Length: 286
Length: 158
Image (cartoon, rainbow over all chains, first blue to last red; front, side, top):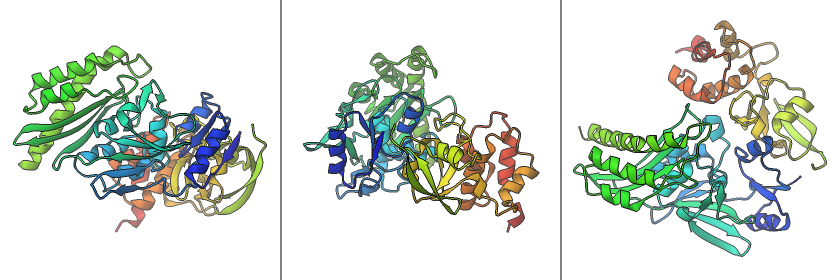
């Protein structure tokens, strides 16, 4: 197996075109673990380490936040560039594994693997993020909603590379919150919920919810959000929204939990997360 | 498999030239080529923490790091902490508190705790638990480990 260290993104894409079965490597936290387990055997590795400009976070003039694909979880988790509801993204980053793995793993590497139990995709779905991709023909941008096409499968062609992720502005005063149920601190999620919500005088005026771990891609249902927007989030309405999300879920039975358990937990986790946000708001007002 | 080539590593302050192929992890090279057996191979998946070393002074999993991608970056293993026979306060505290049982996890957790104490010389037990949450001790000797890290710099309390 050859390992290449291209200096530009064009050179990296060219190497992926030339070497069928080659894989990009950024932090190694996912790919090397898969190689160690014998689950992938790349014919060649293309390290993105020496390409300038792929790592780092910037706040654009319009208030959106651009995260370079090679940005490590630790840097996303501690970034001050995210405002209002955008903070769901650093909140999720801080819940990934543990500090040592957050020193290694990158956002581009994590989302390109599209593990449904990983943390970023639900947060990015709630935030309506877009993904910038370098292709042999140039560049393209995909909404995160269309990025995951099946279990562990993305819209990325084998010779394409994620270059950055853009999180748009969220309403002033909105809150970003990431809730994760896991067996132990640092494990992958059994179910996770990313929420962006805004309250005005106790009424929910803006809501985005995405659920991780209950299907190949994060679940999002505008109808469930509309049901809650304009309300005070009464337990019965939240339970109904939870049932609507369960109805579109497709969870698997695996070592962490059964599909049935995930369907049971999903509405409860939604209710817990919304209650926690409301309580924090009350505490702030008081 | 590619043919191994010679790579230049900087391990515990010493330049080392070793043979490595591109799929070899830093853990394999440290243990099998350089005979530094402080980093342990537990899960080989980045979960257990026993292989943790410092690269650029930050704790990382050596089992998830490809050796060729660590060329010319300073690497510290548990063997590099003590100066000769003079242990660091953290190492001494681990001994004094009886925080070693089988010892398999000790090398990795020392590296994480070492990095924590460099940033935060007097951590609370919650901060230690959070920092060490990615290091499994299958003897389950966590209470003494947390105590030892909390007390490591007790002698230098203001």
